[in-house]
Length: 554
Image (cartoon, one colour):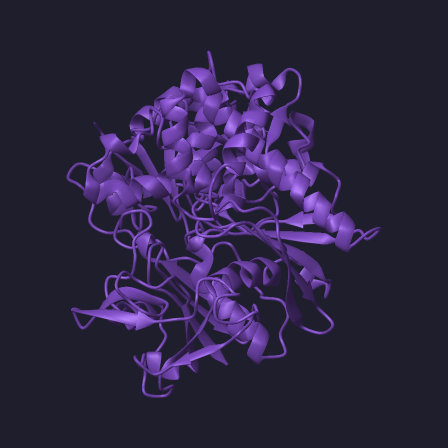
């Protein structure tokens, strides 16, 4: 069965599953240097994307569209989009179970649009369900046929715990954890410099809002988490009148108005750091309460899904607690993985498959394109590139194979650079037009990670927090964050990827199994789709792709 998942609203994308194998997932932002979080341009773009990947839309057996809230002035859950260039409000499943159905895997059928002539209409699942099943079905637990709890905390909902049973193939709601929607951290931080939304043009506010959470997580390292202020946040949250995505605004406005009384002497960074740690502790405490009451004495697996699962501090608090046997987070827990998740719901419900076979490098293929005048090109293998990195100390854009899934560059759409230069983090942030407090991630060989980082456990997708072991911060200063942590990505030397081969050769030459790794993209856009884009950007002298080195003589 060919199943196509469609995410039409922000973080738009199209994913194809053949049986239980993910063939590809194309996020709209990764086409033509699209803006981050782009939605589908038009419903006709679904067919365009399929054809670009060699798939005839008429061969697809099932189209599945992600669920959503009712659009403005709409009576039913829907997505505002266009069809043949005309405005179209597309009905879909509700955002969350419990509105029209208590069944997390309720399947909704619609006939308002036809993606092909083979299947009249389309089906849809709750948006929250795509996060839950997208996380579970990509997990090692599903591969082993094991049960798991799934915690979903997304922008529009409070954290919700589900239980997936592999034997009975059921998904059951366990409990909500606390009445705070997942947008609260980003929206609260937007009341404080440098994230204040009053300074952002109205037409750019949605893009700004979606980008704040990751930046604020990094900015928190400039401050100190004051645990004595947790009681103040308890009081503030308890005073909120209901569960709403607007609670963050009410909270932010009150803190700004009463700041000297509520948080005397605390800087913006202190308040942000404190709120982040407070939410992490609250999440773990409530999760532990539910697990101990409902699953006493059991050692359970846990999957994390929803946009909040991109917060490495919260992920680490949960994993380090020892409450669970194992913790899994996919590299696309946010809406970047929604097309995959919604297709996975149909696979799980309508076929015999439990686990999805997938590879993180399943995005669009890299292309070359026309080069700016003066650029030269020559053959260059991974060993030669490692030698260049070591000898010249220059950052290099690396574009190879298919793009990574999700928001984080994992070697196929990366800028790699030596981490031994103490000025490299500043240089990379400058060429990418990023604030100087933003961290640069380390790419490290898996079998060496525990020597350099604590805990240094395998972390293929940069989703957990690691500390530097003694002596290493001085040796590779460019990847050390302001709080002494590192957002580690590990990669096996045996992995069939250019980045793994480059790093292996760099380690052999330099004795350092670590390189800087940051995303190769225009500021505010998705990854570079081709060599031409990286060359026109011109932030680095070198671009490497598929065994060829492109050089800017300037």
